[in-house]
Image (cartoon, rainbow, N blue to C red; front, side):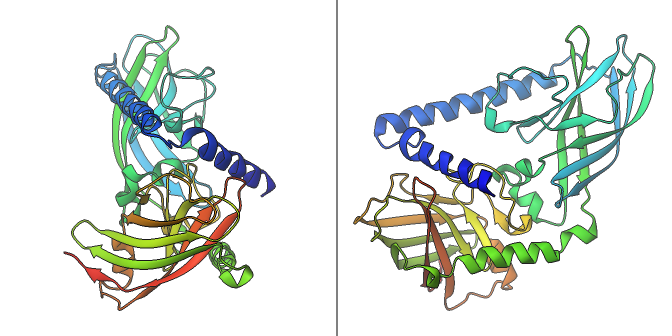
Length: 347
């Protein structure tokens, strides 16, 4: 817990004083960096389709199972080497993420670091020789990095998850053989429901939000709360006033036990809360600038995937809803304020 707090504090200091743009020039640089990352991802994915595979490596996926408790994906494979050289497993590529085998990838790769996870391993590092077939088990740790990303948000909240991507094998000469796979991922029934541990973690988190523990340093007056059923988004407009002594940035909105996170603050998977109730990259605010002590600002917050709240309420438009807005200071202090607002439908 202490290590997590130290890491969180360091990150918050970084985004307050180093990375988050506060001027148009900085914003342009950040946008350019994001575009460069996107281009790099596209180029890499394009290169996979033109790899040396050409049917030389054949893969049959027997099954794929994900465990929320261990954050691990386990894939049962049958791999046949119909080529002329021995190969070893190197990585799984899915939804832009590269899950690398650290035994093979010992050096940094030219790829956006936020999409690189060194957590893949085959049950044997022995090469698969020409004309050989091997039944193998592939384990992908930290798979929640992909599941909590926006790109896969809808599938992870539906009745099924799919793993659609490439398995890459490499020869000793460095030739890459990429094979496309597409398989539904099972989650054991015992792990889809909230466990006692899930409920305990959730209760601890929600209890800590109670403003009775400390006077709120942030005051919020809701001006409008509009739900767009077609876009499945909530647009929340409110006036925020910082009556505390520290500058703060918006972290998340909590509604009906669901956490809608600001990706600029939460860049790593949330581990202290049930996965099915966490919505990463779901909350975006109209300004990344910190709210300074004594400042009052009109704020517009757009929350995607808000249909999860409406579906749980059987799509009945409630007269009002209670929620929490969370803010963070640069030294890792969390400030929470409770809000109550009336919905209005826009579509």
